[in-house]
View: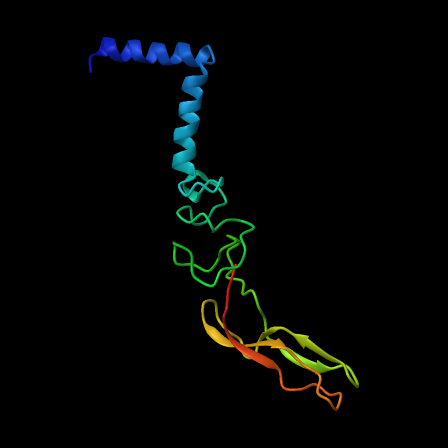
Length: 144
């Protein structure tokens, strides 16, 4: 490219920018947004100093909900806070007296992100008014 051509191109861009040409500004913004937000979730990735810790997965960003599978970057830190936070803690049943049973929904034993474990769904009251055996199902631990 000749020096004259480069100079003319630079002058054209500078005049357009100085005049506030919206076509130039919008194309610059679009390119920057694409580069800074590769997954299109509206949050800039780390390559541009943004909070989106996995900019190739639109389901991973600050405030994201829990997921049972790792994100596209291989992490369970879906909320980008630096911690893989399990959705459920340990579950248990507790008697609150006659005809009353309190259930804390959760896993019987600590279950890591993405692992499957026994999950307490409910703690029914027996006909005698005590806590009965908990209703258990197999569940995959989701994390955020």
